[in-house]
Image (cartoon, rainbow, N blue to C red; front, top):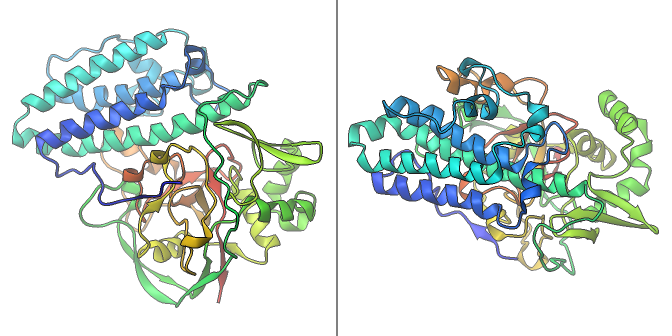
Length: 432
């Protein structure tokens, strides 16, 4: 496995005119590169309400640049189609009515070809704007251009996770992309890294891009704690399953236990048992579960139950951020082309924290809520994160579907407690 290391974020609000053009083209090309293994039929399926068709993602990110950049910046700009604003608005209520999210899979038109034509149309106008814009206006629009690029990287990750769910519903177990085995002969034993109690600064501040929910930076007292040296593996999670983990109500939160019964959960999402052996659907087709890989596609309920079974707990997001501050941003990201968590190589483990970035998002026990003195931005952009700060939990660290340049220690991802389809896993913590 190739491990990628972050040198610096290539998407910065302080880029020059030429750099903005280069980064815009780079991010937009990568979205289309992720679509190269697909056939037209793959683009249009919506396998559940939380999944969006690939075609919709491609159009929505173009609508974002059209709505938040081109329309304010170009006086005579006109959309390629007046109804695209209705079809491809996601959740921005201040911008008007929008198509029902669970019905995105019913949008047969525009076609895939027309969707790419829409992207070309938006790209031509954005590049034309960036080539002609003066320094003052570039500074004015730099924040929204930067946000748009990071927004598209978020949707690139969703494209990977959503197409996996789409393909998993096909009994032919189709392959998105072939890959070889990544099994490691030996995974290092789980160790613990201790951190003393202290008052820490938490949240983003200073140079570089961050979403609004990563600030304001603030002080927080953190009790002494220990964090597991690596992520929980499939083999360790199998021990939980074989010990009756899904049958023991004492391990589960009340809503989790109700969900286990309502959804008939017996294993992580995409797992199935055949002739006494566990198999898992991957973007490379159906494979036998590799015990060395980090366990993936588990909900907060499952992560919390496993931690209780292991006589541990999940970290708070402040603990996670404190631990991650001095850890290099490197690991298995979407750039590796694996699109799947990889085993930790024992030869690279040295008793320190491993896999803090990449492979799987790590559930924390922290509810997704605003930091002290948080205020959403003005206008429609203020709807980006703030209004979702309810009934969700924070995840940290990125995954094998996240772009390397998109992640940082302060990044706050968030999902409902019952969500499984993202690349979500487990890292244990303990008090001292």
